[in-house]
Image 1 (spheres, each protein chain N blue to C red):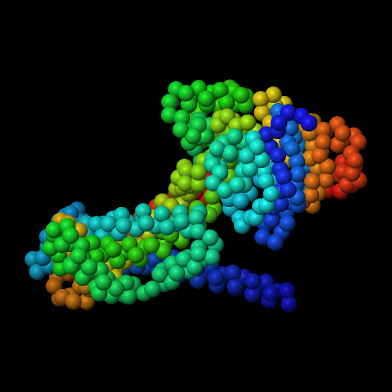
Image 2 (cartoon, helix red, strand yellow; image 1 turned 90 degrees about the vertical axis):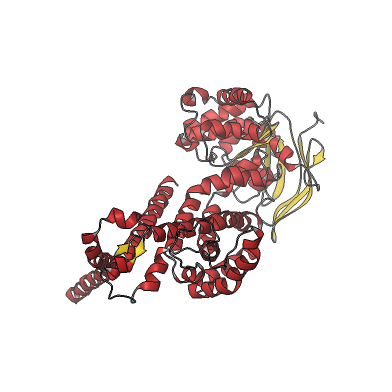
Length: 296
Length: 253
């Protein structure tokens, strides 16, 4: 009796251990297959050349990825420029000013935002944001644009990363001890001074981590961006120019023109680069979160 | 009676939702004395203390009726300049909560907020109040270090310096030594003894011996009511009310 119980214990323990390890194996597997698949192109060209060349002419065996890499960063950075200030101010309102009922209401709406499939954001971008840029925003700045642009991608993306930043920021702000606010207010500081000098300062590492997590999400977001960003292989000179980020390159081209030599390998390499960029950001976020936990 | 008093409560009632926490409190706090508010936990001591500088109604849904007069001005009236009221009263909490900045900036925080610009003056103030709280010698070489690097006892004295730096008239302490070891406690108590010649001090404590060591005047609270208030000698030696007697004997807690 006792033995079978012990046996079950051991079996169960090893089973869940195995299942957990499989999830790690998946990541390693993805990595390995991407490396193997991108090996052919790396044999013919140096990685530096591929990374920093802007020539993308598959028929001439030119696979420069710089345009796509820089587009990825541009779209991500502009989406952060739009969303970070808005998100932090909204979080301040939700965590410090509004009453509980309004807060719960807003946070559940934001939860829903987080759950909307990205293709719907893409469609919203196509029918609202793209015409808005074409007819209103670009003419306002004396620029001409068909609307499918870096700016459209950044706006759509910024709405998509809203929930991540707001949810985490509200949480870290609420974790700032109430007594710390009391201490500041008791000295005669106003509420805003207290928020500015004490609450935001204390919450700063957590806010930074939320921005990094949002960044890694933005870097990898594919379909919604692809639908509005224009997909022209040229480094954008203004926010009204079209761009062509890495995820869009992969999604648009994989499976087509595979007969061209090295084409598949080039696409795989760009997937590998994207994966490395996103992983690097995730690791960075982890490190920062661990530091925060250690401090508090 | 005596000379005018800084703090006076008149028919003060405080409700947390449906909870009637303070019931019809009338009292006067004597100036430049140490007043101890004693009573079993949950009796409203802290609420009473924090009602003096309106720290009770900043977070929760709290209803207050009656008046707290500070220099004869009701601080619960509308349109009052609360930052000024609070500036005149330093608050020490149960545990030290240094602000997330350097030792220097913790002390400089109040003066800066209230508009002091001169770097030289700020430096003088910081030094003066760190000396006033006997911290200067311990921290003078690491003023830019984060305040959290200090020991708990030092942090509490830093919080005292931070409160004093805005030149209050009153010091409010909410069990200010409850997180401290005996030595750090003694240092804070010594400070209070020195400070009472310049400041009116009100502390909440659940340690009777501390009240006996410190207090000139004692307020005994029980279940939200003020049971008895008077000079420390009288409350500790010949209390009038039965409840006070029992509490001082240690029968109720």
